[in-house]
Image (tube, rainbow, N blue to C red; front, side, top):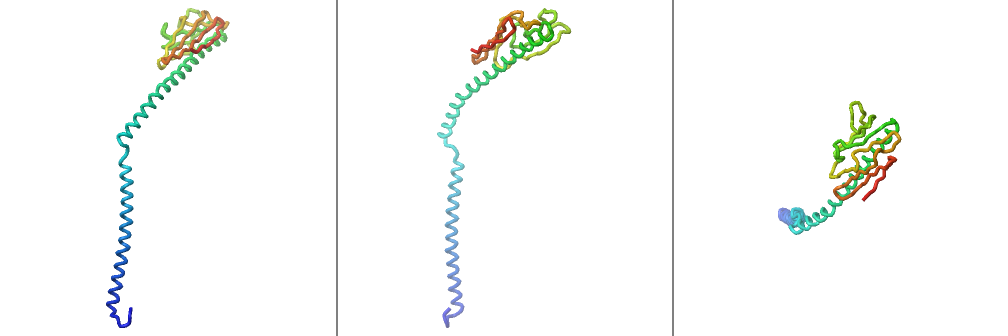
Length: 199
């Protein structure tokens, strides 16, 4: 403030300068806010844009190719595992019959629940009279339910009767076949021993 200058003139200029400074600061803030809003808007537009039709079609085509390759392989893998499990189940049933025949000193039979249809399940039972049928009072050692999946099971003989010696009354072969073409032949020799052939 210069000597002799009116006080009100000094404060008027000071106020104008302060207003100008505030205007410049406000302009800088507005510019910064405008830039920030533009950035947010650009990000939002990219988020909402999503996939284009071409990108979506390419993605679906790739997914279809991967599924066409993967599903048959997975189904084949599941069929092979199922076939192996069913083979083991039959072998265990035959081994049980042989073991129990030796322990009990008598006949133990493995036969289908439905005559001629092994895929519908089978039974293992003690057969003292050797007539190959379950009679009143005869002990059933094991009952196996029908096969799952599309596997088939056939046999060259009607049943497998183990004697007290562990031998088999009639040799035969059980054949398990999967829908994928896998085959397991379970052959029982006259000594009662089991061999498995894969094809």
